[in-house]
View 1 (spheres, rainbow, N blue to C red):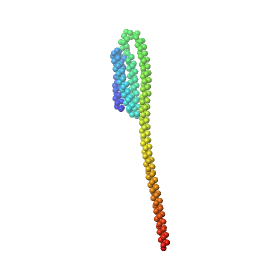
View 2: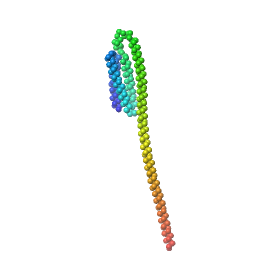
View 3: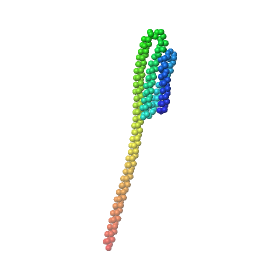
View 4: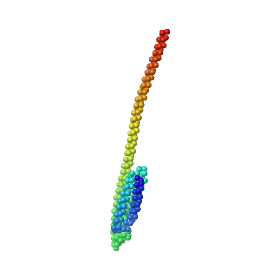
Length: 224
């Protein structure tokens, strides 16, 4: 899994380097050339978003003990992506002095205030967009925390299920041991009973033999 993550990292580094260069060129262009470059950058930004999603999925498959390091790296890449998106939005409404003069021509002085006002309005829109994006990121972060919490809960439930099975097996072994002990106890009780019976029989036989000997001696002495 980590090898796939590192492959995505290399792709991320290559594409973001290209994007940084292209975003820096946008304010210097105008017309169709600028439009085409903006579309190209927008497409590459979408590729980077997909890469980040793939990296996020890979991180979730990494064992918990190693996940923190990859989460930290992924977080830095997301921050870099946010910066690229902000730079891209600014570059789309920005013009170099050269291009601005070309666009405004002789009316540069009279249109300066309108351009400033337009920039302020666009900057205001960008601020609102960034606020919405921050809210979206907070929601996404909350969702990710919920997913990770669910994963931890599932692992705990799995561990509890395993522990329960172990306890049940231990109980079954205890029942078997109790059954074996009960059987052994019955066998020992029977053996003890037979030993006692044998001793009683030996005692009775001994008494009979002793009585027979005494009677024999008595009758023998009496006959003399």
